[in-house]
Amino acid sequence: MSGPLQVLQERVIACTRCPRLVAYRQDIARVKRRAYLQWEYWGKPLPSFGDPRARLLIVGLAPAAHGGNRTGRMFTGDRSGDFLFRALYNTGFASQPESVSRDDGLRLIDCYLTAAVRCAPPDNKPAPEEIRSCREYLESELDLLREVRVVVALGRIGFDAYLSVLRDRGVIRSRAAFPFGHNREHAVAPGRPVLISSYHPSQQNTSTGKLTPAMLEEVFRAARGIIARR
Image (tube, rainbow, N blue to C red; front, side, top):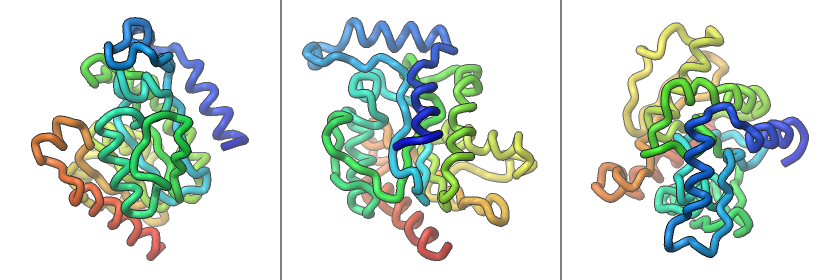
């Protein structure tokens, strides 16, 4: 990655806007988890990553305390990421089926991965003002990623964050017209990327069977079909 996207990610990494999140991510990086005592935790906001010319944009929730906050890459080093990258690999959007560190050679293919919030939040629950504070980075990426044809929102927070941008820009009149559901396609507006909502691959969803590997793969197969038609 280079150019404006790289400059944007450097701004993300240096961000200290949300005192609660700054304190939490730094504390987690200092105390660590017993299984990862040998790791030097990232402990900073996470940059997005992927193909700058991607036609698929994925919007997640936020880094996991001992996943992305440890490894320095989104969805990397935790079970949610294992679930996601396996689905992306099986549908041709990732070069390998798992991701354990930001130096493991994983490449996203025609795909870019971002999130509504860039710092790990306590209990995986960012406050509304923290989501609003972080939204500028998502907006900038939407402007810079000009080839996107499909947006997949993983979970309601990512879904609402993306729709809030469209509403405030006058693309849609109200979020109420777009109900959240798994593998539900939303034609937002003529000439705009198709939005697909999906359950988040959180451990709570995957361990209970609310989201299965086949269900998540169906989302990305649907995305690939839309890309082929557009």
